[in-house]
Image (cartoon, rainbow, N blue to C red; front, side, top):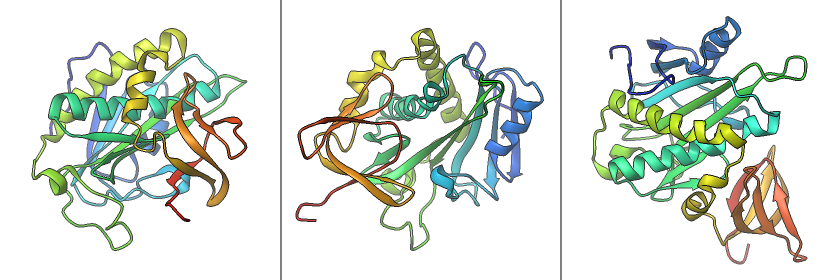
Length: 259
């Protein structure tokens, strides 16, 4: 693919593409530390060490998806910076639904699902320096053309092609994603609150009005009845004692009836 020049004001206007890279997040971090402008974007055909959330790897060892990372420089708290993964998941779902007609839903805090299986994931990474956040790296992986997954992912992961038979143009999709995310990010940056997208985000939440388990590092922390998210990107639910609970981080699994 040729270098990308999307119809944006600043996001993706400085771009690098590599056929082969260890990790777009790692490369973006090096560029951020060397002073690259906000909006710098790097994308790769293949990643040999793609990074997922909670220290996991992201399967991206073939050119069957869109793997990219952006450098952002918000002036906000660390928790507000981490809410960018919530904003990104909404932006991806919105783009795929509005522009491509795909029935994509969101699993809090940072995954997009299609037909009950994981289609895309987001990893936000930030550093602290003298109490300030000099940059946030927002890494995104979307499965586009993968037809088969390893046994461990067969029941949980999917791709656009596998579900629909549609072969999306990867570079055009990236341009559309950047254009849409720039608009949502600029809106968010005015208040560092997700209020503007709250209603629509909660409508797309796949575990809305479900009893869910919240786990952290593989340990179940609590169960609650999911009511959605708040303006800070926290998951809001009702505990077994009726108390309203707000969760800042963790993983969600839907509790099966009788379990």
